[in-house]
Image (cartoon, rainbow, N blue to C red):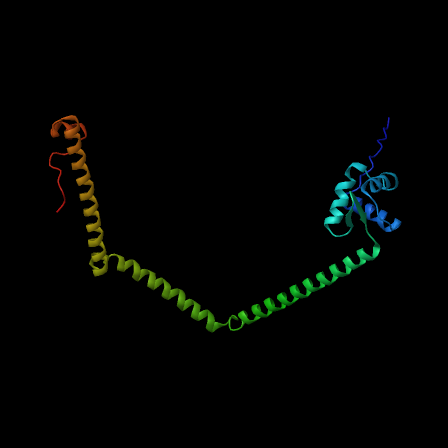
Amino acid sequence: MITFVKSRKKGMTQDEKRGKLLEIFYEKKDCFQLKEIEKFASKEKKINSQIVKEIVQSLVDDDLVNSEKIGSSIYYWAFPSKAGQIRKVKIVQLQNDLLECSNKKNQLVEMIENCKKGKEESDEKNDIMKTISANEIIVNDLKQELLKYKDCDPKYIKDMQEKNLEIKDAVNIWTDNLFSSVSWLKRKFNVEESIINTQFNIPENLDYIE
């Protein structure tokens, strides 16, 4: 037995609904309040009246429909001539954008061609590139060899001496802080220094670095 399933009718898209509402204005060539537009939309264009306000506002935002508050009421209107003007302006704008993009494209093509000049493949260029690659290998080998003797480099030695001084100063500062802490503990808790050293694993011969 074959069962025929009735296909569901596809609903209108948002753009189609906008177009249908614009048709109301173009066909009737008049000004309307929202209630009137909702009535025409429901009866003539099969658009749910509950979403008409949102669609009309989107048309107003896109400057396709005019609106004006007169007294306590808001009136809406749109004429085909306005739509034509908007399309003309849009066409001019798109043509200008197209021209600008075309000019940029031509400039980029010209820049690419200029960059290619003098970079064509040749035996001479290939020989030069091989020489450069070989020299780069030699330079890298020499740098590695030089690293073996950096301990004799005066600049390296000077840098190490300065770092050693910084480390020594830091160690002495922490040593001084530790001595101050031990002294404070002795006074605060009336405890022998040897007990404090034992408790906190402080070497008995701890002293400043000269």
